[in-house]
Length: 222
Image (cartoon, rainbow, N blue to C red; front, top):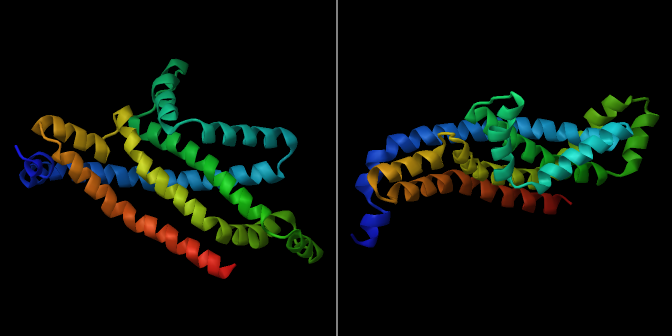
């Protein structure tokens, strides 16, 4: 077999395309769920780290540091294979969402912390002088400005996590990579992996360009 028949066999790609499409649907569902949960939890961790009393502050710092330091693959394996020894059994999808959301939330917390700390203290003091309580200051003054600062790096983290959803295949999650690997075994041809790589590229390349556009826009705004 020549190079094209081995790696770009269109007949094989078309034959396994329904499998890849099912895997792509699972991957998108996993990515969207993870991004929503991880972003919300990450903002919550950021607020706890900056404004909570000392015990909760230390706990938030520990969670952020641990899950920024641990490889995603290790977190996935621990969640899926170790928790059953504690009597907690999660499906492959829930395990993947849980592990990926923990990692994303840690990075989100740090990104938003940088955004909050970049806001001049005078704005908070001015809001207090107007009689606003802390929840209102946080919601109306701090978070909107921090969001604008944090959007480019947070979007970059989201793209990275969306790409890392491919690691969910190690916990038997039938995502795009898992389906492509199964298709490769069935056809004895690596073309399904190339097709999966092209699908990842089609989805993630626009997201990568979006990150670049947001960074340029923020640079001009500053």
